[in-house]
Length: 379
Ligand SMILES: NC(=O)c1ccc[n+]([C@@H]2O[C@H](COP(=O)([O-])OP(=O)(O)OC[C@H]3O[C@@H](n4cnc5c(N)ncnc54)[C@H](OP(=O)(O)O)[C@@H]3O)[C@@H](O)[C@H]2O)c1
Ligand SMILES: *[C@@H]1O[C@H](CO)[C@@H](O)[C@H](O)[C@H]1NC(C)=O
Image (cartoon, rainbow, N blue to C red; front, side):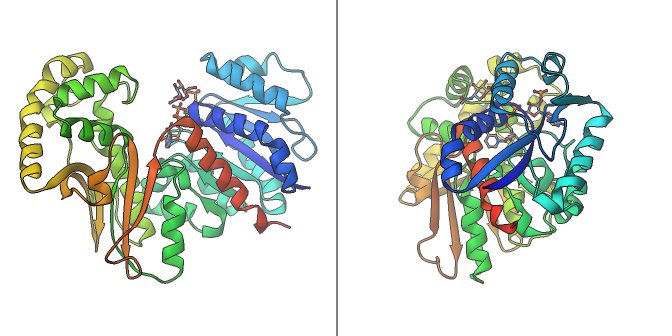
């Protein structure tokens, strides 16, 4: 049996679902001759680790206890004080990073320790930068490490065989792997265009059906489709981070601030100027007319209106665009993500990747598949 040691950073929606997947896939993995050994887990405050990372692991009963505690909204610390002494230890503050690096130096090169980042934080970048040098494999759902500075990107991507990050773009959809396969075959990609926000995809298709933009956004918020402050979706920043990751894979040496980002709301309705309730009640309706006009214009041109990322030549943009109704993007309904890739091989008709681009379940499944994808690197 091949043993794959793992440290998981982030026990939120995605991290907990990953734990569930790991536990429920035990016999499936055994049939494939592998076993995942979770040796450490951390949230924003603390790290829980097996006392002896060579011979011990956090067993399934502890993993499920972690799920219970974290879904109640408690911190991992509460668990640390109640667990059986001697089998695992807890660390907090600056000790967390020190301990992760210590484990990485023990199990990185020798055992192929995988560090999975399912946090939504930039704070993990420091650790990731260090563990690459220790021979660890890295799996990311977190977009921050690859969408911050170019220096961090280069460092973390230093050995492409040891990093997977499928879930950073389009959740579990095979966006990154499709793109990497095209690129590694020498087929030049000259254009990527995609709708990479489930929330904005939903909003645009509802508006296309004649509903008022403000009403659609309010409903989306009530249904839990948006971030708590819908401006986090409407700003386009999340889409821009995904676009940046794709652009960098194509070799563009750019940063977030060189991407032209179109926001749905003007600066004077921004979070630092207007409280969220005020925006929902009074700000949003002021945006209806403009969207309605754009929809009408698109429709009279035989087009659909979509919020997309576009990468072409050395340009990378994020914003509202008219697209042919009969294209994959034009036909898009609801919250699916769609990505069209144009290359020499896919020139008239693009390669299209489409499906659910969000959700704890699919995102965690993407992370798990990534972890297993690198196992063959180690004997
Ligand atoms: N959910 C989706 O549909 C989806 C889809 C694609 C990609 N993603 C990405 O997947 C990641 C996780 O999403 P999520 O929905 O699970 O987020 P979440 O529910 O907010 O969970 C984030 C987790 O990260 C932990 N955390 C924060 N700072 C940390 C640090 N410095 N070190 C270690 N852990 C830290 C948090 O700790 P506390 O519990 O202590 O707060 C929390 O457990 C995000 O980067 C997101 O963009 C999510
Ligand atoms: C994802 O997980 C979080 C935390 O467990 C939960 O609040 C949220 O409702 C889940 N999202 C979905 C779409 O199931």
